[in-house]
Image (cartoon, rainbow, N blue to C red):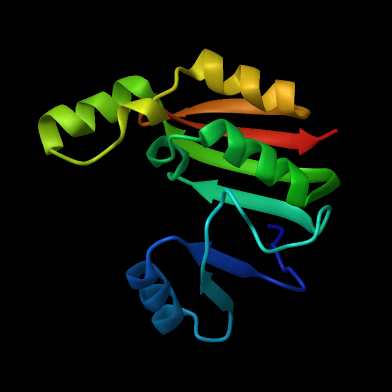
Length: 140
């Protein structure tokens, strides 16, 4: 089995409480409060970016995809796991969670914007239900 052993690993979240939890579990890593719409990194900095379940919270999710593209090196890997419109509506209706309707997207819209931004989608996988998917992409 191969291991992912990055020379540098950074993580950030908009919520300070999440950063504090992350620092407790992994104090040696570089965590900070930040916004995916305005990342404080040079262009073409990262070999890989991992995004787990945040884009459905961001009304400007298309801008976030462009920002992810900006910070990845050419040939860099993007792995995204997220919820689509149907799953977001389910969680709002039945779990009373807050997902802004202007952040909803279909999988067709999501894939279109990944490709329109310049990503090549290598693989899409359903996770648990059709409302949750992962996308493995390469920056062209």
